[in-house]
Image 1 (spheres, helix red, strand yellow):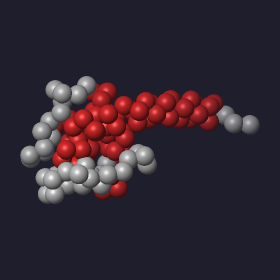
Image 2 (spheres, rainbow, N blue to C red):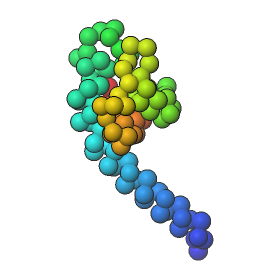
Image 3 (cartoon, rainbow, N blue to C red):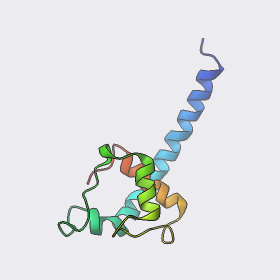
Length: 98
């Protein structure tokens, strides 16, 4: 019989699945609105690197989206914390393709 730890794990997992689904639902609109112009398939070659999530951590992506880096601007003022978090979760998910 599963103990209280497994019930807690189940509840936490269900919560994270719900958060992920919400994030994945919101992120594509943000990506289409802004990110694809520099990172998308039709972006000008050499403008920005192709996104390769297998090389990143979630913290790395979130830090770049929030604070920018070199020629990449910060999106802290343009997008809410929730939108920036959604972009991070989506980029790091299996559903993301560049």
